[in-house]
Every structure is written in structure tokens, then in C-alpha cells.
Length: 346
Image (tube, rainbow, N blue to C red; front, side, top):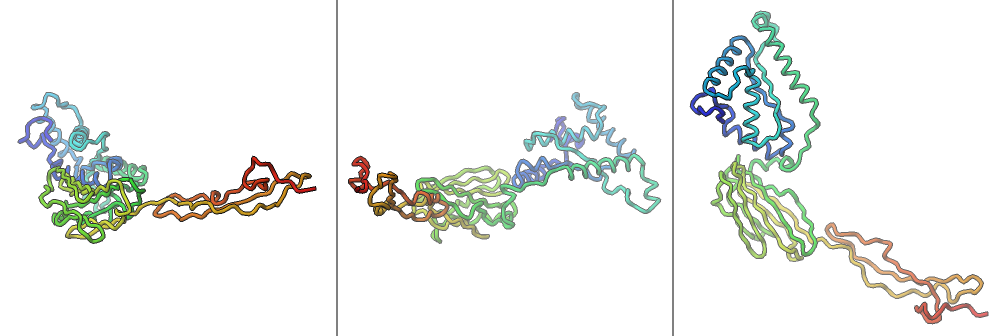
């Protein structure tokens, strides 16, 4: 980053906000999500606050302002550094809010029992050390526990190149589409991108092209036997995401699908989800009464039942209250309520 436009002058460049630092922060964001930035602080370590260090920083600020008309010579160096890094966070990483900054001299002999060391320490140095470490402690204790989600839940071997399928079981209804994503991190193991393939029930379906670049965003797609395959590589060299799409699932698509490479394999079972099914109604039972006493007029009851097959793979259950049906009886003509009720003689 170069706010002043003098890329060869070390005073005008954030020397530690280099490409490696950016990639490392982006890896953290990829693993922990955007919420990572809500739990972050920038700590400038070995940041001495003695008179000599303060004078040197003031001199550097003065030199910088001689070449940058927008520079404010009265800005406190810590404030300038805080704004400089937050500007880089916004421009390079898309962070939407300011990240707090701390300026701590980690080798300051604050806790030393050596009187000579402590006598060489400026009281202002100890004051600032306590101030910044108190801020760090307060920040750490004020944050709610971080809830891991997304890539943060990946198995331990994922970042060493083992293929990762977020789900181990997928249950879909007939006619629905099935999408399976397989992530392979190649950032720390370049061989993880070799021999990457999809298979079903131990039969190879598709082999991911081996010429995909690890360091440029690249999209590729292919189709084999009704299965659609796409690959997207990370522009950070983090890895490859390969996706398989099964359109309008049928029972023939059920099986164990595997995403594998030369490091390991990861499996997902694809199952057809079927709701509970009712059988046809059985015959009506005999009426609970052969006739109806005129004195009470109380009707009898006939019933019929049906059975159900249980649901499969997460399908909907049948309501047990729907397993029986009933009707009033008896009628002059069996089952015909329009014929009138059948009263007992006498």
C-alpha cells in the first residue's frame, strides 16, 4: 500500500502489510467468516514509547508530510498508523469497520524484579503499557464466544488436503435437484489437487482436470451421464471447489458418492426421500347395531381401516388418526343414508 505515491521510500509504505499478510488474513476470513473481523485487534508489538522512539517517529512523520500535501503534521503517530492500517483493511480486504489498534512494547521490563532495569524505564512507558494491555484484556472479555460455522467446522485434515463434503447424508424427493460441494484445500499441500475425482458406488464418474491453476480464479464445467460437474479455483491459491449436480433425482441416483484425491476420500450417501404411503381402505365392518330403537334414536357405527408403509429417509410421517374411518348405521339399504334409518320393530 502506498498512500503518498513514493513506492521506493520506506516511510511511505506499510512494509508489513504485504501480499503474504493479506493472504494470511484472507485465509482466516475464509475459515472463520466475516465475523472474524468483529473479534480482531491490530497489535503493534515492540512499539517503544521512550523519548528516542517518539522523536524518530515524529521525524518520519515530518519527512512524510514534506512530500504529501494531504498529510497532517500534527497527527499523533499512533493515530496515523491506526488510520493507515484501517485504510488498508478497507481497500485490500473489504473490512467495513475500524479495527482497534494497540501499541505494546512486549519487552518492556514492567514485571522485572531488577531495580536497574526498572530505573531505566520512563514512567510514561509503563503508563502506556498498562493502558494498552488493559484495553486488550477488556476487549477479550467483552466479546461473546465466537460461534464456529461454515469452513470453521471442517474436519482437522481438511487444511492438509483431505477432500471435505459438508454433509455425509443427503435426502431428496424424487424430481428434486441434488447439489454436492467438495472443497479441497491445496494451499498447504499442492498434491491435494492431483487425482481429484468423483465416483458413485466405487465406479468413477468424473475426473477433475489436472491443469486448473492454483493461483488464478478459474471456472470449468462438464457433463457426464446426466451429472453436471463444475470447478472453481481460489484466486488466493487456497484450493479447488468441485460441485456435482444431479438434476431431477430418481431412485437410480441413490448411492454412495465419493470425492477423492491422492490424499484421502470423503463420502456422502444420497438417498431418495419418500413420504408415508396409505393403502386402500378395507371393507366396512358390520354395524354396531342391527336396528335403532325409536325411543332413543341412537345410531350405530361401522368402521373401516387402512394400513401405511413407513416413510423413508426423512419423509413425512402419516397421521395415525387417519388410519380409521367410520360412518353411522344401520340404514334400510346398507351404506345408503338417503334410504332412511332402520328402526327396530314394535
